[in-house]
Length: 499
Image (cartoon, one colour):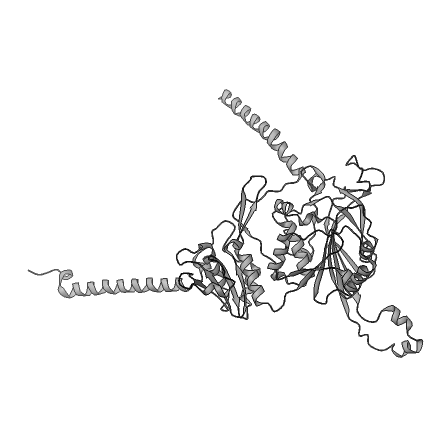
């Protein structure tokens, strides 16, 4: 009996060999694909679909880490198998940015004495190291917990990127700019959350009483004065003028007060700034909050000083004095950072006021409630020295090249310390602190890339609406929507009757 061709032994052998070869090729391709996938960064193979992009690194982090020149190692103290997956995923993303950065898991059970070298860091901590420099991040530093007075609960945010990037900047930096807090005039304390955020930007804060000094310290990157209740002394005013004349930077917060401060006002006047002398009252309902004319939602300038501020968000200020500006001073440029509407007024009799309406003596707006004055100053020979020179000496140096250096000094003034209030800051999703930190960091000479990174909320964000917007939505929900539903119902009934 003759076998079909397909059943002949040779044919079976060839068919089996072809199948085996095909299987081998498929397996080889699968292995190659897996190896290729394993070689790809996790940012490609593991898409970040988390709410708020918890594992997506910002531009500030990418710029810093990709430009690292020193070997940096991050140690994660955690038991193997009990790691926080959010932390390890984020560390993987960091390591992919630079060959100079890596991370290692250190199991306390395997390395029981390792943490002793780093302040006895607790389990769950991250230890960021570069050479002999290190910084320990407790596991609770990686998350923020803020009490919500409205709900009685806590809002949780994932702050790991901010903390890790700040620690990398700290351990790899050779110096840390110093911001001096002026004391001796019953100033308010700088809130701890602002101090912590400055530290994260590699900015150090120290107290300074000018009454005990002969000059402002040479390492001062900027001076900060928060809500002084007393005026400067002649000695302090002169030291402050000398500091500014050398290209110094000052940020000032003041509160409406009956106390006169002529010496401080004189320094501000040299920079084209002066107080309105009254409480700013807003008449535009779209620029006030909660129905209170003294609680402002001012316009935000697009100034370079606000590079890290959400221009589409809000800034919230409570009880402000207005700033009047003089634009005619030579070598002085004034930028209005925060402004009211044109309908705003300044209540000069605010101590005894009985109405929000304009009264005799009140000033018309608009007003600045945040201003930045820049002054070009020369560190060369001053006028008094020049006047003392003889005519012959002046003639002989007429053609001599001027060796004086020209520098720029600045004063940033916010006439309400409520900008530092953490509760108000939370109501505008951190935009108040963004204004302070963005401006102060740049005054201190920090690059934009070194600014702090906002924590990524694991809770719901606040929706801030102005009084005018609230009234509009009340009108829509209480009248327009019910009326629309009634009209639609009538139309449907009439159509059914006709049918």
